[in-house]
Length: 80
Image (cartoon, rainbow, N blue to C red):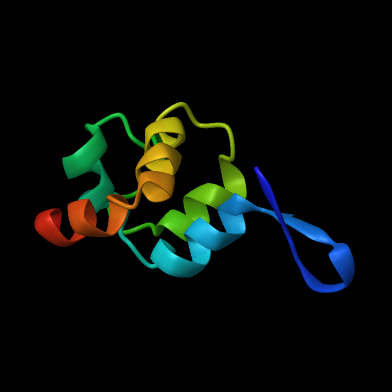
C-alpha cells in the first residue's frame, strides 16, 4: 500500500512500520510469529534491519497485517 508524502510523492508502508516498531528485537517477534521469523538474523537484530534486507520474508505478511489492524503494538508489548 502507498500513502501520500510530500509533494504528492509516495512511500511504502514498510517505512511506517520501521518508524513505529523498528527497534523491536527479532527475539520478541519470534515469540509472536514463531522461531522461523527472520531466519538468518540474530535474536538481537532489530525489525528495521530485517525490513532493510528481507522485504519479502514470508513472516512479514502477518506482521504487516497486524500493524494495519492496529494490534502489533499490543502483541509486542505482551511478548517483550
